[in-house]
Each structure stands twice: as C-alpha cells, then as structure tokens.
Image (tube, rainbow, N blue to C red; front, side, top):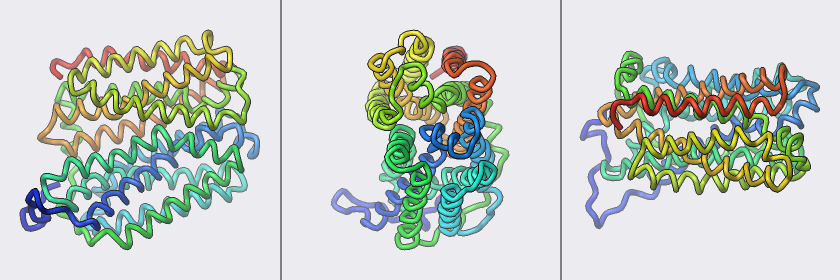
Amino acid sequence: MTITDAERPPTTTDSERVPLRSWLAVITMAVGTFALVTVESLPVGLLPFIGGALDVSEGTAGLMVTVPGLVASVTAPLLPVAIGRLDRRLALIGLITLMVLANGLSAAAPDFTVLLVARFLVGISIGGFWALAAGLAVRLVPERFIPRAISVVFGGATAANVLGVPAGTLLGGLADWRVAFVAAAALGLLVLVALLVLLPPMPAREVVQLRTLPQQFRHPVVRAGVLATFLLVGGHFAAFTFISPILQATSGIDEGAIGPLLLGFGVAGIVGNFLAGAAAERNIRGTILSISVLLTVILAVFPFAGRSPVSGALLLLGWGLAFGGVPVSVQTWILKAAPESTEAATALNTSVYNLAIALGALLGGLVATNATINGVLTAGAVFTLLTSLAVWSARRS
C-alpha cells in the first residue's frame, strides 16, 4: 500500500504528540484483532461442553476450529482484492458487524450444522479484518510512529493467541459454552461502536493486486519462514485443539480446573512472547529452532510424563512458554528478510497461519477419532520437529 505525502499525517517533532484520537483508533483495531483471533480459537477449550450439548464427538467438534481457519486463509489475500476501492473504514465496520452476528448465531445454534455455518461467517470476518487492520493503522500516525502502530495491532493478535482461549474456556466453564460466544459478540459490539466513533474515512489508495503474493516464495528466508509458520502452528493446533480432553484423560485433571490452567498457559505464552522477541534480536533462526525443539520435546513426552495433575500442568505451562514465542520470532524473521515487501509477505504469512490452524485442527480431529486422544500429541510433535528442516533450508537469515 502506497501512502503519498499529502495523505500521510504531518511529521511530528519531538515536542509534538500524535492526537489521542489516532492512538485510540489504532488500539481499537488491536482490540478488534484480539476479538477475532480469540473467536477463531474459542471452541478449543469448549469442545467437551459443545460436543456433549450438541451430541457430536470431540473429533467432529474440532471442525469448529477447522472451518473458520480455512475460510480465513482464503479471505485474507482475496478480500482486499474483492472490495476494490471501497472505503476501508466501511469494510472494517462490515467485517466486525459480521463477527457480532456470527457469534450471536453460534450462541443460539440449535444444532451442530447451524454452528458450523456461523463459524464459516466468522472465518470471513477474521481473514478480512486481519488483512486490512495493520495496513490501515499506518495511515493514522506520522511516519516515525508507524512501527509502534503496527506492533500495537499485532499485539492484539498475540494477546488473543495466549489469553483469548483461556479466558473463553474459563467463562464457559463457570457459566455455559453459549455464554462464551455471547461475550465474544459483546466485545465485537464494543469494537464496532469504537470504530464508528474513532476511525475516520479511509478511502482505498490503490487496488490491491494478487500477483505479488506468490512472488514472495522466491525469497529463501520468506519461503522458509512461511513453512515454519505452517509447521509450528499446524503442529500446535493438531494437539492443542484437544487439550481439554487430553488434560482430563491423561493427567487426571478435573474439568473445572481446565479454565484456570489454560489461563496459566496464556500467561506463560506472554512471557514466551517477550523472551522470544529479545532472543530474536540476537539470533532469529536460533530462536525459532529452540522453540521447535522445546515444543517437540513437550508434545512427545506428554503422554508418558504428563500422567499426573502436577506434571500435566507443568508441561502445559512449558508448552505455553514455547508457543508464545512463535508469532513474534517468525514474523520478525520474515520482515527483516523482506523489508521491501512487508505487506505482501505479511499477508502471505497470515494466510498460511490461518490455514495451519484449520489443517492442524482437522488432522487432530482425524487422529482423535480414528486413533487415540494422545495420538494428537504425537502428530503435533512430528510437525514441530519438521520445522528444523524448514529453518535450516534458508540460505541466509
């Protein structure tokens, strides 16, 4: 996306500040990203509740994660092309409205088919909002504040990955799984109101082209980074989609303790995010390799070493610590490798990230249905181990 001098907010001096309204608009998009990424993975901690209420197996219930992930992976690169020159403010408002309606439908779904339709609609809103938000944030602040604005928007997604699911699981466990979807819809409604109040008209600067996306695969580091994203995220979600039944069946943890434990997983993930960010400044490729090894070890030993509530909880915290560093480390690697095409590379990585969520959850569902629930841990370990090959294949970092 090209921004001309006339379109960019005026450059500020050290004594000047960005208008509070602009930062509030950036924060609103970050909260919107948090809400949408949370909604995408919300069923992870609610599978036993939803499966029991709608009379479907846990493997089948995993489709609630697969469907929106697949839809989002397609929507992320295609929606900016499809909407042409439509005002981006209207696009964001429409996508958040769709999210609110879809979660309302999820909460009221009388059967699993209706719930999957609602999750399909959620996938459209996720992919579209994610594709537009970061690019729009840079138009709200002067040039020297652009890195900070982008980090705020991506911070919403990072927070969702480590806190959204635990919070939703805790709410669903304390009340009802439908209440968790109502809460997600309410958060989306708040974002909608904030966008209406804070976000100025944002006409399209140019029609987005698709041809630059496949061109990113010509870059060895971008190619390796995108593949690392697919393997790490896919392996994680193959197992993590079924973490609730795993903790109950393998570690003997009571159903009521799942929500608090997943909240601990989220806190560990936040710590891992900052640790990986600091480590990536010194050695990005080494950081990704370390994360891959740690995730592989944890997933591989969980069926044997996680057979008590204490050991299962400790392994879960280690899991959160490792996975919390995935988005920041891989994204940093890609952006440093391709500074001349950050938007295209980011769109590609975002699409693959969502595809990995969908296919990982689908793989986990197949394994859980046709083998054993602990088999999803082995499948996840294989994926994360293969990440090392993808990272080492890059000729430069």
